[in-house]
Length: 311
Length: 311
Image 1 (cartoon, each protein chain N blue to C red):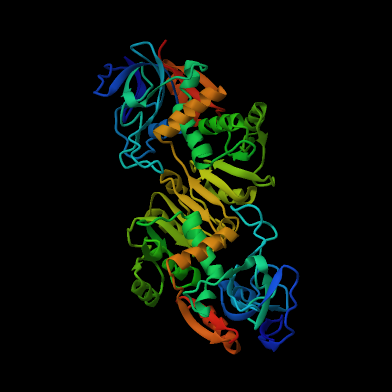
Image 2: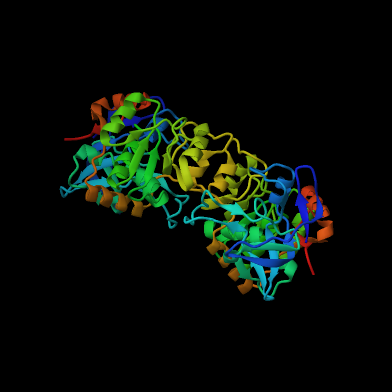
């Protein structure tokens, strides 16, 4: 089969043997696979414990030998504690073979029917971004209809999915970005653009992956007793964190990453019930997969970058 | 009556008129009143919106004209939202007259029967410290029997009450302090001394009032999915806060201050049920009240500093 293979000294399409499935695994023809920042970090060698060679790609829409179209939960071995993943937790696509290939073997327990209202490419947007957005917004952030949520750094896969989920849940959605173009696109979907350094909005929940020194700006935007869910920290560590504001305003600062099998199942059910359509930034063929990585690295995307893997 | 009066240019015992109670207030003879850091901050002019002259003191054990011994909830006008106090929230003892006096008028709704197993001086330890410790540990921190809690800066009023509450609740209690003497005292009560910079304990909950750059040390001590409740920040803002740890470990960083009327009632019920005895550091007469303030400023206390106000 053809696959996008990352070796220590090379990255490109190769003809490699089809995978042989272990017990409790099932074989899929990969229909589409979307990219995540994780793939980019691994390609750039900026990830813990990289094992070469590897086929990247965590977000798989595939078809079984029986013809069932499915989506794969990328979280493996979460463990017994719903509050946090255990030591054996890992993500599909390094160290195990990922989805940027024509075929894949995945644990049968991680396979779910694909939501029928979505295209293959839309289904492939869901696994990591969808469960991350769902857990951050609902399991951790406890967002309810009528509340106001700020989603920072709009444009990325998780952020755009979070925006669509929050709008579907009946929340008022504010978004921030350094890109005026991305803010304009988000407003077309029904979000409201804000400048977190200047605007004095009052929000119930912030869902953030920027972190850094911007974090303290959210302390002013969030209402007393409100919540900031952090699912990433692209701007790094935070400084001058005003803890007096944290205790006097009774704030909740909650870390969140990925999600449990229940989060994943709830996310799929939510997408189905509300007929949510993920936003696709761009679509590439498997032969063009390296261009897809370059698009992600440029950080210009609005929505998910998807690779079509087989017909 | 006699009272400890803080004026812009003076601080000492004066003979002033007895208070005249407004509607919905009741008159108490003050039996004992304990000090809080808040009193010290106001005396030093380091508090927002100080109004002179004022009688300080928020923690009152008193006796009604009917002879009932009572304790007073120092939180006034919390507001309708249990998650956070409202705009009108204020604390007994500035701007309204406090308890370092022979008599006081307090809102009838804030008056509760004093736990019968406690001395007047022990009762006076409870209001601010007790409700702050209770909300931090249980309402916010959701501490359960069998869990491990770290209480930092042991020695202060809230911290020692939190230690006694956590022990009574069946938790394993770790404590930290720069003072070896305070650590030794805490160990006499059943706590275990740790050095947060070096020891690699695993805790479910941290209850902290230090903040500053020590905050990030707790990220290593707390288990995945664990909680840090911040009720003060004596070391100021936090720097180099590793947000990657926050999201990957799914941590909860929760601000907490004071407590709702329900927190107060639950705290009293807890103290009664478990027959908790607050730790008294030292006892002064009303005439000696200024010495009590000096004791607090020296930060050498282990437990509450109490002033006996009338016979």
